[in-house]
Length: 102
Image 1 (tube, one colour):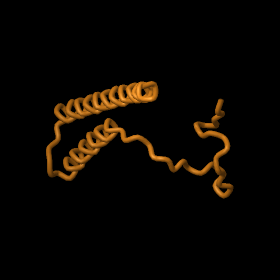
Image 2 (cartoon, one colour):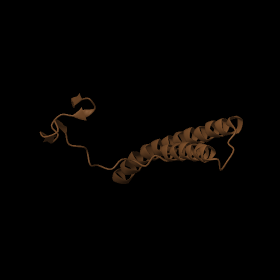
Image 3 (tube, one colour):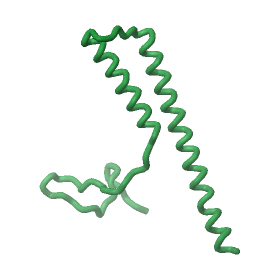
Image 4 (tube, helix red, strand yellow):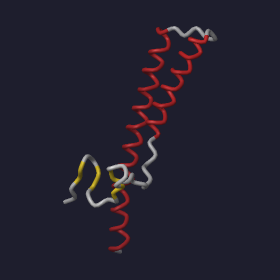
């Protein structure tokens, strides 16, 4: 059993000058749902920024439901990504067993 301290495993390299363990440099999985959510929030921020600059007239009755809809699309994207990754993870070990047994 691996022991963890605040989400970090023991035994990592330790940077004594800063008093914490060095960051993990491994790559993480691409998460398209977070990309969609980030773009939706950036779009809303840009729209309200243009409103504050006097270029656009952003009505909250339109903008807030649009943001909610975009976040629902981001949630759907995350759910589909999770389902596809889980499905491919289940399929991979079975194929390996079938090939080696044959």
